Structures are given as structure tokens and as C-alpha cells.
Image 1 (cartoon, one colour):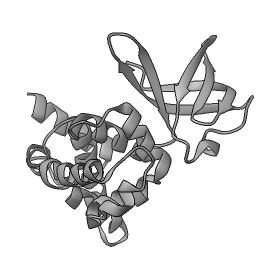
Image 2: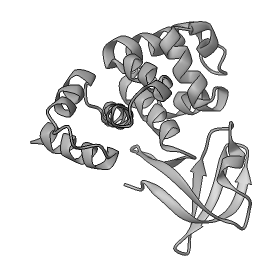
Image 3: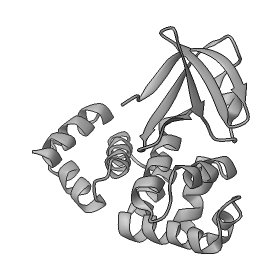
Image 4: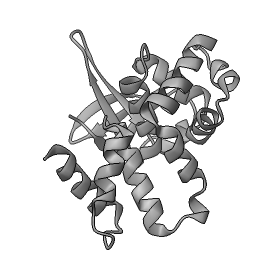
Amino acid sequence: MITFLQGTLEESWPGRLVMKAGGVGYEVVVPLLGEGDFGNIGEETKVLTHHHIREQDQTLFGFADEASRDVFRLLINRVTGVGPKVAMSVLSGLSTSDFKQAVVSGDIATIAKVKGLGKKTAERIVLELSDKVGVKQAWENEAAGNSLTPDAVAKNDVLLALISLGFKQVEAQKAIDKLPAEMVLSDEILRAALRLLQG
């Protein structure tokens, strides 16, 4: 699984990059929003990726930050009928923060405006992410980050990461709650929670 590429940006097109890393050129599909986030041609850059494998092909999807990649993975793994193409359309039509806000507030109309999405798909996205996955509360906490303590922010970040990895919110929250209070670093909390969930 390819989780990121670090190398030279060789080409940049709307929705597509070519990265040279280790002497190999990788084509990466990226959201239309924020294309400038990946730097200029000829510059050293890092692109977070999701390596999608199907019977007929393999595609690398690229993201400028963890939040965008997490949203992409939530959409393709947790929302019925949403594949990589639709998930990339969402990230091309809305910023990550605007999308999260729309899900939290149940703003189906905003999500439905994304090219390639209809009202039914927008409703399903809001319903399944809010109710079934339970990401709504975590995103509300994230939006209120300034009023949370640093360790609460770290635990919320870990909760979102675990949900994007496919764990149910209730299970993930129980694992986090079992950890010692002195754990305050996100990486440390994530590793410990994963050990509990997989053990």
C-alpha cells in the first residue's frame, strides 16, 4: 500500500499530477480544489495518497492533508454506493471544512450542489456519516477545537482517525477511554488504541 509520495512534481493538470519519486513517475488523481497545495512544477513536494486497487486497474488518489484523505476514505468505506469517483467529486466541489460543516448541520442542499451528486446521494452521505458512523459528534468537537483542552483535541483526532480506518465510533471511543490519562500525544494514543482494538 502506498501511503505517500515524496519527490519532484513533474506535471500538474486539473485533477491530476505526475510525481517523480525514486526514479519512477507516478500519476496521482487529486481534487480540483486546492491544486496549488502541491507546489510548483520542478519543486520537491509530498503528497498523501490512497492506493485504490480493483480487478482491472490501480489508481493513486492524492491529498494535501490528512483531513482530506480521511474524508475520502470515510466516503468510500462507510457510505453505501459512494466510490472513489464520487468521493473525489465531493472534495473537488467542497473544501474539507465546508463538507464537514454541511454533514454536521445536515445541509443536504450544499452537498447536493456538487457536480455528479444528486439529492438522494447527499441525503445518504449525511445519514450514514451522521447516524451510522457517528462522525458528526467528532466533527463538532473538531470545529470547537479552540475551546477543548489539548489532550481532548488529540483524543478527538485519534477518534476521527480510527473511524476513517473502519472502526465504529462506539468501539473506538471505548478503546480511547481505557487508555491512561497521561497519554496526550496523538501518535501515542492512536498506537495504544489500535493495540486494544486489534488485540
